[in-house]
Image 1 (cartoon, helix red, strand yellow):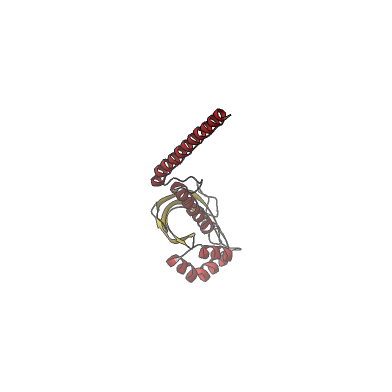
Image 2: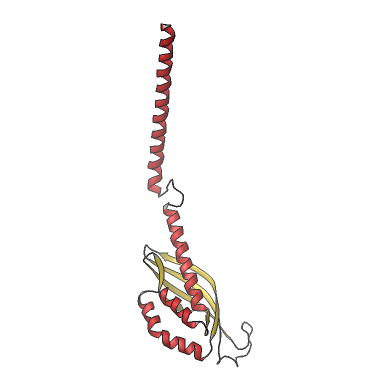
Amino acid sequence: MGVDAGRTGESSVSWMRWAMALLAGLVVALLVYLVLLIPTGTSLVPGTTTGDQRESNVAALRGAANEQLSTFLNQDYRTVQSSMNALISGSTGTLHDQLVGSSVTRITATVQYKTKTTGVIQKLSVSRLGGTTATLLAVVTQTVSNSQTTKVKKSASCAAGTVCTRFHLLLSYQRVAGQWKMSNLEYLRA
């Protein structure tokens, strides 16, 4: 009985040594894995890598720019007040101040001339992205109709009674309280 008890004790110790060696190997492998991943900005948790954060930031920026440009390009004299409010709330800095300062005049003119505009963002690209600032380039088209365009004749690219324009825009954005807001809009030569 003593011999069997000794063998059982030896196999238990052998099994425990093997389990401890396996556990130590797993810990070392995990540490090596983490040391290799940390400098590259990779994370074990999905959606938290440096690349994922950048993609999320770009997506938020592009979403804000699409929304703001769409509001800018698509106006209707019947809803111009809400459009102006959206433009003002989506802007910051000097652009915000300019929109606030000119909103009454713009709204009055839009209503007086019964202006309707429709626009399409043909291309929108991020040219520079920093932590709190960004620059985008946009190519847009816009069709304008109002009480003064009624006599405009049809052209190859534009319906009668409308004026069609293609713009190249340089947009500056600033991150304010976690949201991207337009801080400047410049027209570029086509």
